[in-house]
Length: 505
Ligand code: NAD
Image (cartoon, rainbow, N blue to C red; front, top):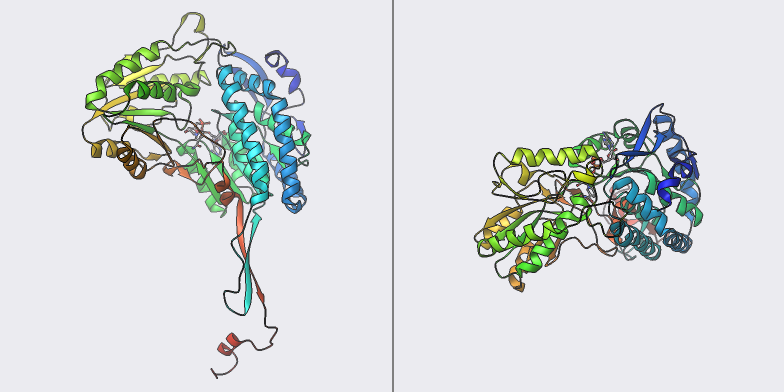
């Protein structure tokens, strides 16, 4: 927890990491990093401007041939060392993540940091398993094979909800497959992305392979996406900003990977264990104060279980302990900012006109009044087409609606523009199996909601975007395949040349 008091010294050189050095931004504008639990400014730094983005891209561009030319074994060894350095720095990383996001220290310590270390170890191994498809004599006269090659310099943009994990999800598959990268974290939460890049350098990742630009979305972000020397844009954030990023990237014909918003359904069939479902819904909707793109947001409960489920969720929410995020017994910290808290409160206030707020629906006050806190909130009685059911809230708010038939439950689950994640709760394997097939989302859990693992892909359907983070599937985003074809005949006038030279014999 010493980090809370040393943060100004730690980043005294600036909050831009370019070519292996921390340095100040040159935009002429500053950004405060605010502890959302207290409202206190813990660091003010100079934001990146276009010149800083140019310098970071140049550094990544210069580092590319050397890093792309390293053997998979060399890259793998470096990433294994990287995982060890991160593990040694676990406490410092967890402190910084809790400080800038307000997330409970037990979440940073047990989820964000070990998840990042595991992801790094996974990509250290996966770096040696990049494969093209089989080689062969498909024409008869040639040998063909496929090379899988890195794309070049990647420009990535990340959100504020899991800054360390998002940096890891963007940087690791890119560099494991031989690319170099410039990452722009959210300007309110750059600390752990910077620390991640420093740890990479300490492990032996060459200077310039990983660069961090701490800048505003509209200027540094857009300049990065449109940059001539960026070969691909990988963006995680809201669907609205994702559309803007797609416009800019498409105009310069860049490869694009979009991980966007979510509005995950949580479907409880009438044979489910209602107690397990209620626990799953409370944990799945409140994790990270609900600022999780896969959080359970819409619970659809088959009518026989509806009352029991609503009662159990309300009781469990009442027992969740809000408090100082650095207190190990705190379950729920503040939201990331007062702005985000007010945005969430706005959704709930508007819903009072058409739905019932069963519990929560306000800031806690008292000792927590200066922080961006919001009570766990349960809403019922909303119509399927209402704002609170259709829009991403990104806060500790769960809406519960009843349904009658299985067909209806699945149709309601699919009835938003999003398709990132979902869960189905049932003890009947056929019912659960049907839900996994018919719900349109990039991940469907059965009798759980939230767990992720490095080996499995994460990514959306529909307006939640396209492309995958984590797992070997992410290499499909960060590599391109090249067909190589060798003539095996050594003849001057080849058979197919008859299309130009004379008639068919
Ligand atoms: P956001 O879209 O406001 O910002 C995301 C990033 O984009 C930030 O770094 C921001 O500075 C940058 N940005 C803003 N305007 C930009 C512009 N015009 N050009 C380029 N970059 C710009 O999102 P947020 O509020 O930081 O994060 C919450 C959102 O992220 C939610 O919608 C959530 O669902 C989504 N998210 C998705 C996933 C996923 O894997 N699908 C994971 C985490 C978060």
